[in-house]
Structures are given as structure tokens and as C-alpha cells.
Length: 158
Image (cartoon, rainbow, N blue to C red):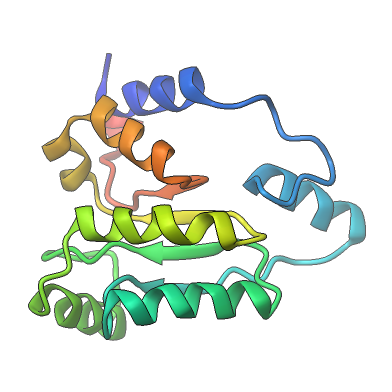
């Protein structure tokens, strides 16, 4: 199967039961609720590891407490082509301090159970391919990640 098809298949095969209205712990449940209420989503974004992972963990909890509907957590990457200069600088600071994907996942595993909203990871395609699609999907699912944003998947792979 093509890589993106494999990602979708892995996510679908391992997915829990479909979300129902009122299920704020899933992205689809969150959007269903918001649509029913005529509201728009508040989805803040932060880069993991900037200034450090302990602060990132605290920030995730604060964003949740402030009413985030979904939180998007950027995994720092050395070639963040889809990001603007502010996020690129944040990712560079995190990488300079030694933040790794494994460190981010470890922190996510600890924090997600304390959140009332779903967490989506923003990452790039190369780190997924580097780890293997099935392995990557298994790791992020086990960590409690609810969704992925992968901005650089080639169009022909979708």
C-alpha cells in the first residue's frame, strides 16, 4: 500500500469505537458538539520542548483548563518547511536543547490522561517514514494522541 494509505489503514484498524455526540475526548466528538452548539473551535498550537518539556507539559494543562477544544502539539523537526519563522525558531530552540520525538511521546503519555480535550500532533512525513508507518502509528496511539497533522505528505501519496 502507498504510505498514506498505510497510515490511514493503521489508524482505522487500531481505532476505538466511533465517537458519539458528547464525547469530548475525541476530535470528531468535539467537532460534533461544537457544530450542534453553533460554535467554532479553539485549537491552540505550541511546539514541544520550547523552552523545555516540563514547561510544555504545564502549558498543555493550562491550555486545557482555559477551554481548548483540541490542542495541537508540534513535534520539533529540523526542516520545518510548512512553518513560519516564529514556529521554525521555536522548533530550532527545542532541538538545540536536545528535544527528541521519543522525549515528546514520553511527556505526552504522562499528560494526556490529565487533559479533558483531545491532543493532535503536528509532525512531518519524514519522521513517520524513518520510524516506519506501523511503528509510528502504534507509538502515538499508545501515547494517547488523538490525531495527526502531517503537512508535507506529497499529493500523489494521498
